[in-house]
Image 1 (cartoon, helix red, strand yellow):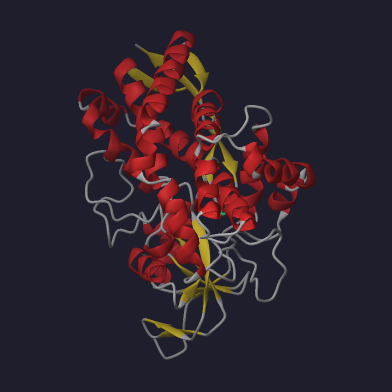
Image 2: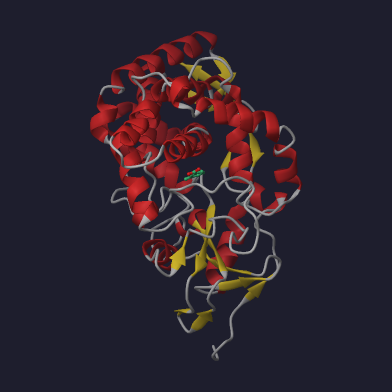
Length: 396
Ligand code: OVV
């Protein structure tokens, strides 16, 4: 390709059509080239694993500080106070990241595991008795909605606001389309509820939220910063795991052989959840903003441009995986970017894995067959891929 020539595509990655079945679009994006120009939003796009991974590793050139959505914070006023971890670069990010890493370390999560297991077993037992249920409302949503706020130390009342807030946050990374506007219908009340939940006095002293406030006492961050870090936990921690668990249930129900393999080999639960994350990645896209002109395989991306990274496409790149569209719970080696990579890699990864693994383990121990009742319905979101409803029937 001649210099300064690059493929330009006109489709809308935030349209119903794209979000309903992104995979044919992903293939076109990957095949078009290592970097493409998306005319509709005047942004660059990268969908191959190599380039997505490299951009995520390079926070100096691919900054998060101007926001990781379409909106460029250097040019537009953000819809909420920016996150001081997600929408920040080092050195600010280094300080805040340390605090959440500690609050969510495998060490501090260790004591939660017993409760998580117990709740998963209790819930699965209840659903097994019902035989037929909604895999989303009754399981993928019910489970995280109980244990995640419990772990953070949030009061039992008013937890539905957490889901409504997640919906807003993840739609807000896309354009101001109808989907975004609809999710913002109740924004004032939902935001007020979330803001109240983040205050130190609203949090149980034994929870992860209170742990974040210990850093205030230690003089590492201010009270307002701690409040924003708790807001990050509430923003990022619930809808993502709801999608992850729902997507895993969908793949296991659709792939009878893989379900049997998991039942016969419960030690595969970790790779099974990981493979579901690769194949139906909850976070489909995030943007970065270039801090300088950057050349990708002969194409020059100018400074200050938005670049859309297609995590879901990278995770099915045939250049990286053999038989990439196949759900294979024995697949090993990781390497997918469902949690991102580099300095912004998900801080809640260990917590999300405990949630996913507890649910899959409880099901595998108790359920012989898992079948979809009819066609599950997607819940379209500008960033997240997940289901709204999923009829399931189980046999023991
Ligand atoms: C990873 C993520 C998603 C959404 C919100 C945030 C983080 C935040 O820090 O607020």
